[in-house]
Length: 184
Image (cartoon, rainbow, N blue to C red; front, side, top):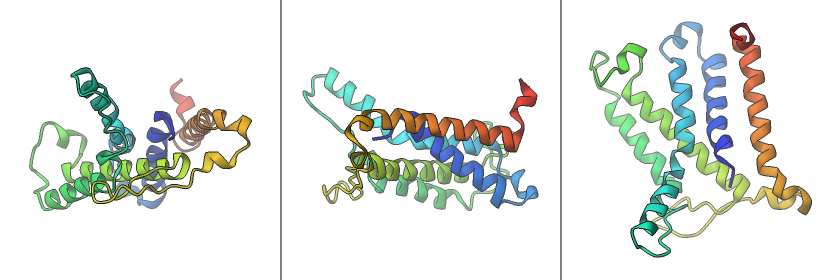
């Protein structure tokens, strides 16, 4: 299973690439960078089941482990996708908290979180294997276990190395596209 850095950075990089290269410049104003950040948060959201497991164990539910169950199934991003579809027709001027100040739409927030959590699930299936896509309807696990194809001495280093690679890609992208060195 990839570490949190990869789960955050992969959705951030993919959504940022979509924003910066697919959307026209006038559409980018309607798609603020806050959505890119929310994609990263959505990318780590399925791991909310880890602290839930710890709390359940602390409360006396011995060896209660909910990790890699509901929040790691395709049902989890589908719930956010359904919330997106339900809230899509909500009027643009509807105020929920202070979202309109940043031109954020609640429906798009749910779509971005769905995308981030879906990327998390597929990263787990690609790198770490053992993804229960159809939980609770099926407990069959799917995955490629890509780290197992590496030499034994590199397997333990592969996930930290993957995090480092994604971090370097993200920083290089920020420099090339957004000139972050101008702010240093």
